[in-house]
Amino acid sequence: MSPDNNISIKVQNLSKAYRLGLKEVKHENLINAIIHNLKKPFQNYKRISSLKNINSTTKGDDLFWANKNINFDVRQGEVVGIIGKNGAGKSTLLKILSQITEPTEGRIELHGRVSS
Image (cartoon, rainbow, N blue to C red; front, side, top):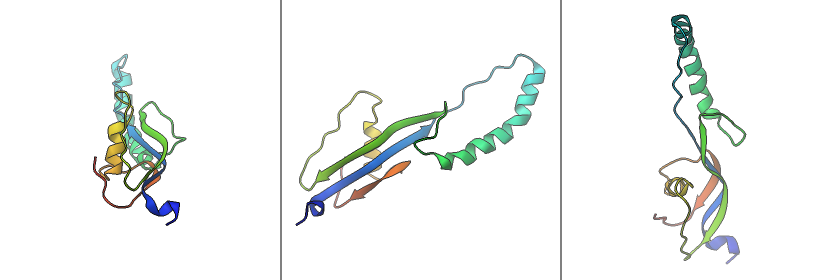
């Protein structure tokens, strides 16, 4: 058996990004509010069309990387624990491994059952 045959989970360059909500904008006067509201549909269209173009070089105030460039292998019969502080991306990683959530970038190979 070659070393690659007994790998149950192989994770390569795994990353997951989320878009956060927009900040509330306060206007100085009524004219600015009207102009902002007229531009809003075009800005929303631009934001929505950019959602499918997220990669590791994408930047923005509304972009949060829960996991970035994770690499590891789990061999058959091994038990793995994931530890870290609150907000470190542990649950996001488990959701991706359980195929509940799609990764933004990277690749996962699963052989056999995975339980979290």
